[in-house]
Length: 120
Image (cartoon, rainbow, N blue to C red; front, top):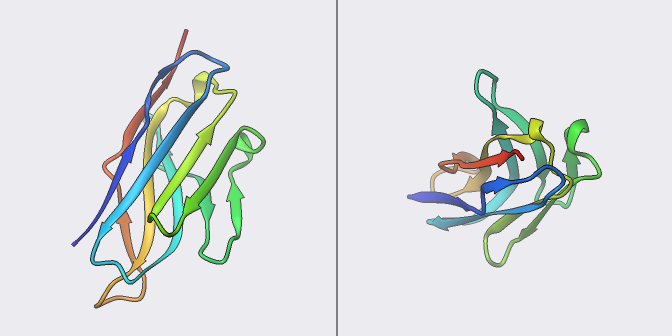
């Protein structure tokens, strides 16, 4: 059984910063891609940032220069540093990981989500 648990969401004023964390646990042989998605009310879930096991990082255009994804493979963690937050960043943020287990080379797993609200 594999679990992803996020933390670090909350309420922040426009222009502020938040750091999201996600830790993976369970029967993990290796972690492939790790990523952050978000979903605002009435919208589809969208990819925010992704980090491959080979070190390739990418961001959606609207967060480039403001958000930074990083990972600590030894701790099985991925982070999302969010600076210069805007009201349009308000959403539930989800951690994603493609994980190799004893029975699968790359099984998708999701965290439960953490709310980020940007408002004055």
